[in-house]
Image (cartoon, rainbow, N blue to C red; front, side):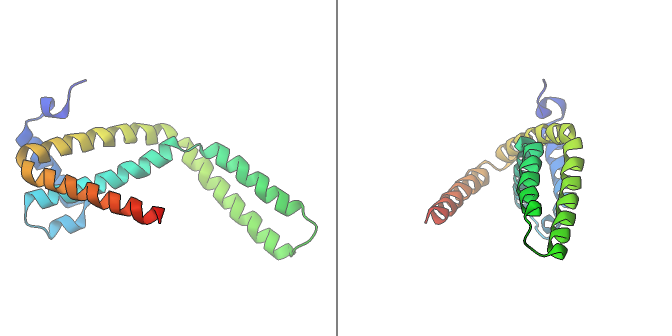
Amino acid sequence: MEEDHEIMSDEELKQFFLNEAMLLCHSARLESGECEKLWILHNRLKRMNKLLGYLHHQDLGMNLLELQEVYGFYFVEKEGMRKKKHQMNEHLCAYSQFMTRLMKFSDIIACYCTYNVRHLRSLDRVIHVYFPEQFEEKLQAEMKQQELNRVAVEK
């Protein structure tokens, strides 16, 4: 499979990503530097990849069954208010419908997840080619921030 930089020139890729940053990230419109715009897009794509990864790797059908079992036990109980049980049943039905709709798009989620990973890899390459010093600085700052977040979570 050809890499994106083998299909388009580096300059065309850079311009593509700058345009995408302007369309996808409103905060990129406020920045004047190309590197900052690309980095804003980089962060947005990373977050999108994380979301798509969660959706792609989550066994939604299993969660739905577990949820129905838990709520089913609650609904079988003789005690409790009828109105409250009815509300909980409506919430469960709405959640079940959402999960079922989401599962119908699992192939699209997988495809877009793969596409987005490749897209981010190409963006990393463009930033590294055109702004190598800033790229390394931002990666190191990001890694430090992740480490601080990890330590804060562990406490």
